[in-house]
Length: 174
Image 1 (tube, rainbow, N blue to C red):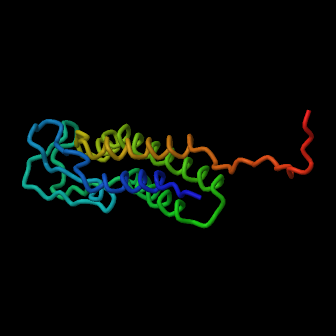
Image 2: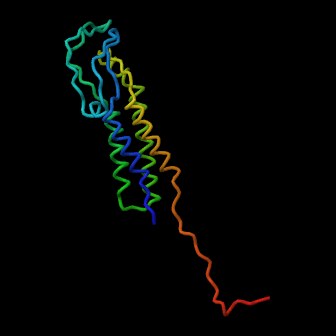
Image 3: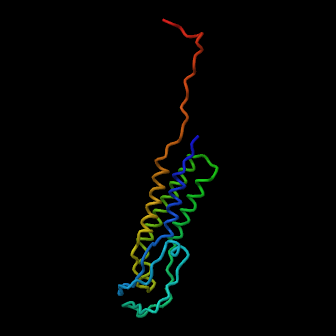
């Protein structure tokens, strides 16, 4: 029986994309970027310490220590690890594919939620940050989409049944 490595490979590719640049962070009123963060830095939290004059129109100056992290990125990374782990578990393939598909879809939802909600959350915390998402983010999203598609479309391998062969002594000739 031939093993399929497409599912773990797609999850591994999605996880490796967390090492690539995920986003450029800048202040809303300043075009100069504060920093470029990888996905891992979003997962563990990166302290952007800059001597900048970040201000918010409503509340005045913002603290200089800005810790950029994302619970959505943490969840997406966990979904990638879980999907990779499921690929190597000794459970039936049908169940394995269902769990891997759900895990990949959860990773997609987490990354899309990070994309939608991160700017609004930081603004609500009096941190006027803007995130410009980079290719690492989109590649990770593509990796999760590929993992979902591979696991969803993968067919079970069935061994075709061979018809019973009749002994030549029992064959009737017309």
